[in-house]
Length: 98
Image (tube, rainbow, N blue to C red; front, side, top):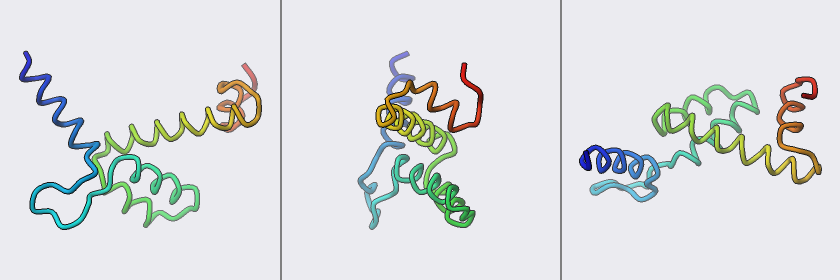
């Protein structure tokens, strides 16, 4: 059982790793860099850059990073506007108030 936890923890550490692995000459991109580049490229309608950023990490890691970026952005906008995160999120998506 503990072996499964160690393997899962190792996979999480690999995803979050920012230093190169042994023999690597360049620091790999982490999931947050990939998410920021992917979302920025998508917002600027640059599919080539979005595809490049999507290749930096696994699809699962990119999804997690984009979700984290969205959560932080909604919270920051909510604080800035003095509104609830739900109101901001629904407004960004063009949904009526709850």
